[in-house]
Length: 366
Image 1 (tube, rainbow, N blue to C red):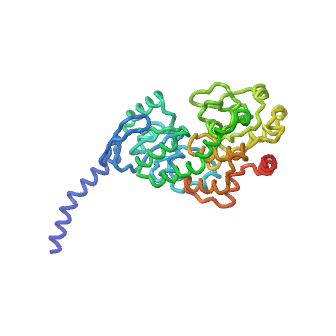
Image 2: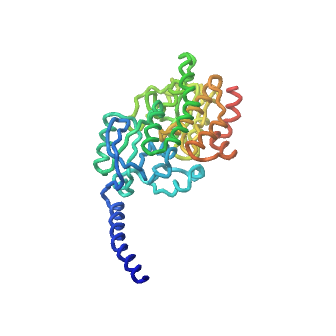
Image 3: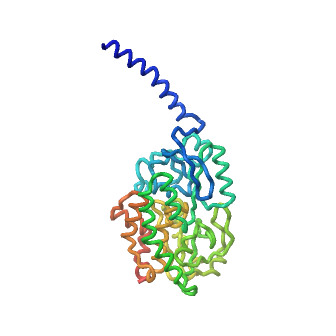
């Protein structure tokens, strides 16, 4: 009996093992061929494509990286954002172990994702780029809008695509709880009462993203006026401006970007420079470091990090209009969008990167 049983097992293995190896080879082949049943979907650009019924892994471009980390961090095949050591404690260990890549076609193909998510402003140029990327990689490219005003439909369509509706509903609930009220109240701010803001970038603050740029969209959302009316530099932002021009704009408030580090050298330069000292903002001690952990709250990447950035900016510029409890809301945001529960020390760190400005902010705003 035992001998007969072993013969049967051996016969079964002779059939099953080759089949398994065929499947394994297909999974690891350079040509992407979904092994699972597929169905047709339509992305936010109106492009139709076939995707697996169950998406097991995905690649996302840099602008959409924080968005996808919020929705489905376990499906990501790579990370595309540079980070400093202080950033890592806010992110999951499994995400930090993912390979870092710059998004080349060769690297994407090597990772074999089931789908590529492209988050950007949808227009004929970006549609064409998505089509070309899909053709080069053999992988469907699903486009979603990056515009802050379209976050809700973006969350909804991705929740359905990835079967993560419960998570995207939490994210949408956060929008309704806080961003909806900003949109309503911003419209009630009279033009003459709008605060004039300069968004300072670059080592000496002489670069900015002007009105009309998606990099400075938060200012429009909260009802502020971006003093920079220079041309938008297509594809990269950070328009160069002169000190003479900034003195003519004479902003009420200066918001400062850190770059991809935590040194805050731009803030320090603006506060100590003799020419910057002539601006209304510096004279009135209205120069503020934008929070930047785990990624900039205002911009770069222009992703869902801007949701918390809009709340922070609204409360900073118009505390008599918005009345947000930033401590409570920040904890809620990190729980939903970063899957991280902030400690008291971490809360203080992310909200007040420059502790010196906290005291002056309280005294000047209240």
